Length: 375
Image (tube, rainbow, N blue to C red; front, side, top):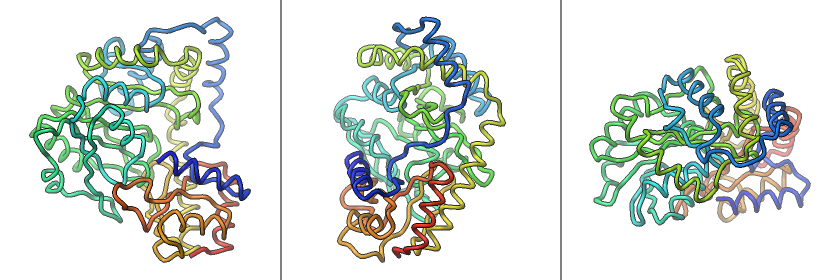
């Protein structure tokens, strides 16, 4: 997946276009987060921390989780701060999976999930989500189980589809995991990017799920600090100990002053900040999806996160990359070919756009799409 994104970013730079292919926020970092990191540097917080993260941050994460999802997590023994959510997930996979274990995940998928599973020798097993609502069938999940199935991976809100799994769907997944004695790995990075009044639910809070679920998240998107690489895994202490050992082995610790900056932001920012985030990005979604529809590129309007998949089946080009290049050439706006999110030749009719951009940049992208009408 990353090669596709980076390739389209290079093509966009060459064309002098607007890069809506890469999921990088253009919005400002909240002042308390910046000031917290600066203060930490000036205080001398520049050496190794505990491999699980500074206690102030772990306590702030636990408080935030309790406040927004009702999850009770032990800040001392149940949270591992790592090098981004990807680092937290990598260490979780190393700790809890063996080579040859099968892990079920939904398609379209986030490419790092697949690459990270394969890096530890695990085997991804794909179950399709059906548009336009990105629904799944429990019978497809049951059919995917083998004696080697060890876990299921859930991404909600999801990249790239924007799907937000409902309580009913998560209850189905919880029952499925219990029936087959599976771990559940969740990626909840976009938990605060929710539209149309939707609510985020952590599957770990459902009955019987706290001990078998590893919840992975971070503040990279929420605070617009994707380059800081601060993520975390939350789970039962007996799993956290093993995850922490691998975190120590691979990363030693996340950057000390940046951990302090994130902690300061969590402590300083109230509910208004998170509500404002959802409102701001909901407005951006509506603006951009309206422009896509006007341009003849049917959007699958997302319920969460800040990506949108669009139907480009009618555009000229042999395959999704050529269709994405057609959009770039005719409008100067870059998107990711849908094949980056599917295995075995899927996603040919789709491209993904990211609308996490400064308002003026997004308006310019909308004007270009509507003015040139690639569709």
